[in-house]
Amino acid sequence: MNKLLGALGGNRAADAFRKTVSGDPSGAPDWSKQMAIGNDAGLFGPDSAVWQVHGCIATLVGGIRALLMQAAHPAALTGVAEHSAYDTDPLGRLERTTRWLTITSFGSTEAIEIEARRVREMHKRVSGNFEKKSGEQAPYSASDPRYLLWVHCAFTDSFLRAHEELGYPLPQGASQYVREWAKSAEPLGLIGAPLSKNELSDVMASFARDEVTSIAMTPPIVGFILKPPFGRGGLFFYRILANAAIATIDEPFLSVLGLKPRSKKWLRVSKVLLDFLSYMLGHESPSQKIARQRINALQ
Image (cartoon, rainbow, N blue to C red; front, side, top):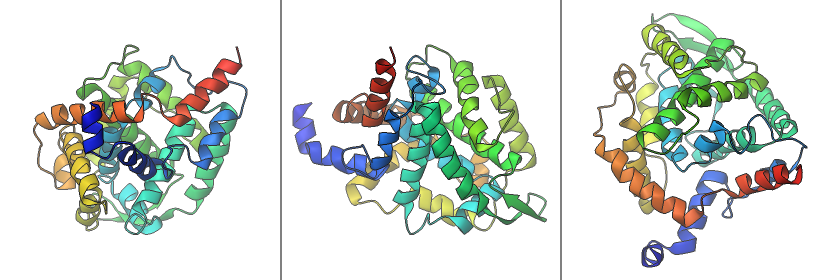
């Protein structure tokens, strides 16, 4: 393993990876300090299903899948196209998403509210019109409950599917993860998120039946998600993970996104890569370690 680490750049490769995901080569950007504030375990805690899933390296595949799945809804896609710098600052968008996920998963309730306030303020600026499945124009807003529900469910479904299909353990069970992660939506203004795996499947089926569709912006944005401006080495590994993400996507989402099915072998290849990355980076992120120290100090 040490020889393999050396061949791939060792600590330099690890630092580059951490900087890509979090914006800091140590994996502990300034916002990770929020993990230390507060006097409770947060919404979840070390024994939760959320810590099990979001503390796992499989989130790399789940994150790519979530970006693709969100692009299947024309309102979400239009919002990204019109209100984010996805094409000029893709890593900045990735860092902001990582920030929200990490603080909400591992932070105290005080830290979560601070982060949710930041996201709610951003959402106030995201609105416009989008093309519905019927071809009609309709208004969208990032604060709209239906929009929030789609983003939440696409996210939940993606991280759960990636975790399960890559073969990582979830002793608490899939429904427990769905039930716990529903709490994350409440600070953003969504009440009534699915509370079980079956409920999540039903909501995703309703979106698939009534709302997801391809629009003019779908091909270029999907293409960008699948080929971001990484270096040659980074893009090689990213493509492996992206193929694994696509291997977990079902119809009609594949057709809406203009994607062809991928072999499940990509999941097996990715599992080897992810296990190696976990060995190289450590089994807990710096943010997770800070959160655990905060919680241990309460005892």
